[in-house]
Amino acid sequence: MATPLQNRTQDLPLGRPRARPPGELRTNVNASLNDGLGFSFMTGLGESYLPAFVLAVGLGEINSGLIGGVPLLFGALFQLLSPVLVQRFNSYRKSLVFFAGTQALLFLPLTWGAWNGSLSMLAVFAIASLYWGTGMAAGTVWNTLMGRLIPQLLRPRFLAARTRLTYSGTMLSFLVFGLILQTLSPRFGPGIFALLFLAAGIGRFYSTIHLARQSDYVPQMVHTNVASVSEFLKLSADPHAKQWLAFVLALKFGVYFSAPYFTPYMLQKLQLNYLQFTILTMVAFFGKIAFLPRLANYAKRHGTKTIVWLGGFGVSLLPAFWIFLSSFWSLFLVQLLSGVVWAAFELAFSLFVLESIPGRYRMGVLSVFNVLQSILIVLGTVLGGLVLSSLDTSMSGYFWVFGISAGLRVLACLPLRGLPLSPVEVFTIWRSISVRPSGGGIFAPFFERLKGPDGKFPWRRRS
Image (cartoon, rainbow, N blue to C red; front, side, top):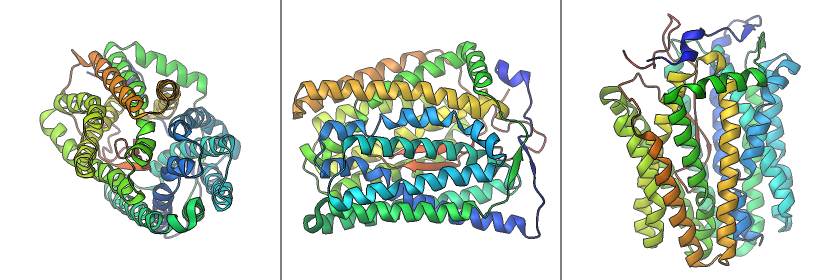
């Protein structure tokens, strides 16, 4: 059954195209593929290794964990400004180039700090916060612009090809530099991270150049934050939507009670080397991208009930494995399982978004949701850090954090009871925006229409 938001409105155009030169589509496709390649290298090399860098320069295990969660709040808050900046630039392309170019420049101070072997924690937090702010804002604008530059009939094939390219680039860059860290860190120490951050910045700069080559749209209407909050409140008034929101927000709080601290636990307590750390992180990433399409096909044929419960309770049980297992190969299997259950969770949530929020309001409503989610992420990260700090970052302290996190995650699944779930039309295009040990990283789905020239949402719940 459609939600009130679906019944109230149809999608409205968000902009008018500028004059199109001959061969414009080919130019846009090639530019977007090259943008994706540069972006994937930045994703595999940049923020993903930042917690390990914090440990390498001696800033401590707690700070290594905090850097994985706290900056996300600034990113979500900054994302709320993206509609204002789009209107100020009067151009989707100019605003996108501004966000991406700024993100590329942020790797310069990281490179300098790594080369000198020291960087204050305040500076690292500031850089990471700006990184997430510009990155999340760029992602919002990119999502909107791609939905208008690529014709609807070509969109599925193009986005599938781009996704394969970016996944391959992310995996290759992450693995290669993990091997470089393993080989050269004994000789160069923290200075080897300078090479990593410099390469990440070059990747994003390459991406920015090709973003600037794309065609543009002049925005005609961008919803204000007041309208976004209003639509979010209307959505949350729906009983089923309220169950979903309670589940997701509570689960993210429980997840981030422990998730940011897996990196220091692996590198400091288990004494894994950089190559082992890289492999364990990448196997979760691989598990997620390998099983997302398979889970999506299952949901299309059999409904989302199994997918939702697999994601919810699967994610809940993951921290418990880290209490009882410590060998590399046992953790290898745990990480593969982690990728699968996180794929199920993220697929289930994306289907909820597509069913519940019309495209006209999606950008604003998700921005408000991201702020609430990020607040709970920060609370979970900080409280987990306080528990760990109170126990002197001991092995038992990590076990307490993992155990509490598992309990919080199980409690978060209680709102799932009684939720109506049925077969759906599924879409499976995802962008990887961060590689993390917990769950394989952070993925962002593409929420524009992939088919349906009649204007209806092809992924709505079947009647």
